Image (spheres, rainbow, N blue to C red):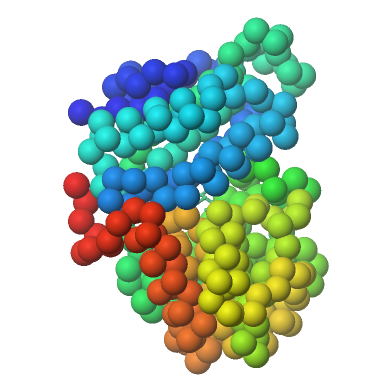
Length: 290
Ligand code: DCS
């Protein structure tokens, strides 16, 4: 049997249904999180929960559960679903109310839902690297909020997908922002560079782990805006996300990066990232899925 969380209760997944006037369904009026599960344990749970509450607060949604209670529910869900390696998807919307752009009355309860999914580690791509395209960033100016409104991201990813690429690297004019569902890093002359966590990008949890790992291990790192030219001139390029981890980029718009193979800084960060996972969630074996 598979379970989901709906409005504070763990119920059978097939019973988890929402109203057609839910504001998430009609307006994308809500926020979400994706949390990685390794060995049945949430990785960087606190950071994801903190971001979830921050995103909700920034659009005026008050999550009607404490972080402690919600964390407990998520752990229970993972255990009940017997999930070893995968993800939790969780979202909250402003709730169901007669359709009207303005917020509904205070007594409308925000709708929280969560479910789990088995997702393996992208072992082959992590080893060989992935191909990408470039696309203009057409999204709104609050990309720091993990909003359910993902049209810009979806259209970018679709473009990549149609040409057999893993990710679309977005740029505003000359400046590279982030991937459609990932943060982007370059390494040039031994220095790792990534876009600052402002309103133009999502402050990735994986990005933050990587920044810490760089600082702890003497790898020079800078958060600053870089250009398309910097991207093409870079020694190495990689992306990061909850599901993709530290993913080498070996091609951009058909042009090879680092001769089409993952570079040494990227590989070092992959190793350090695995150590960070193992510290929190235990040894990663042959990606056994319970
Ligand atoms: N930027 C965007 C636009 C994202 O959607 C994501 C993750 C990231 C950066 C990386 O953030 P994390 O390191 O915190 O994952 N997107 C999630 C998603 O929609 N699916 O998987 C991860």
